[in-house]
Amino acid sequence: MTRDFFVNHGVEKSWVSLIYFMDEIVSKKTTEYITSLVKRDDDTLEALEDYASKNMVPIVTKEVSRYIETLIHIIKPKKVLELGCAIGYSAILMAKSNKELKVTTIERDPKMAQVARENFKRYGYEDRIELIEGDALEELKNIKDEFDMVFIDAGKSHYNEFYSDIVSKIYPGGVILCDNVLYKGMIADDDLVKRRKKTIVKRMRNFLDIICEDEKLITSVIPIGDGMSLSYVKKEDD
Image (cartoon, rainbow, N blue to C red):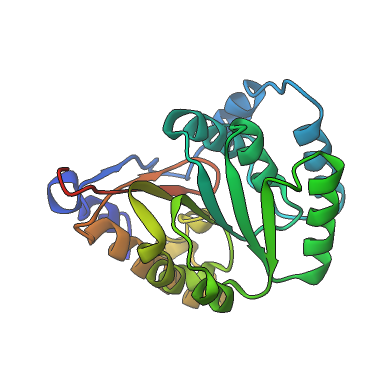
């Protein structure tokens, strides 16, 4: 599979708006410039970014964090489900962006979950962010609530399975946001695929096929960070 994968998923076929840079997801200079435009209005996110950098904890990139923040302000969700909490960076980012927002987040690593809980308490979000410790594939089956938005940033091999479980938990008019869907460009170009990553690439491509072709969704794949997908869950009158 090459760039034709994206060409074949045009707007007419799957309601997809897709932008793709031919040589990389986004050039380094472009990313550096976009990142330089992101200004913070307090020290909370900067402190979390510094901790993540020093401890080699993967969190969303700064330009992606601003995209998420902007999206929260636009759609104004009241309830968000996050898969993949890590140190709580994205959950705090979303809660910070909307004072009425409540976040339910799932993290399977006990050490990360403990750090996240400490961060929620330290920065005053423990009343608005609920952390469920466990494997998302298992914990999703126990969640009966419905959400305005789901943010997937957990095991890249399991996005298909996550989607199967969350599709019934999204209100019509809600959105599904997924990170790392272009996976270092490997999803778009076989020449970039590393042998040990073949399974992840195959499953992620399948996931993109599913959300791009699902008639219940309108999906856009966006070349920001490591690639993001944004899916709108149609209402009956859409």
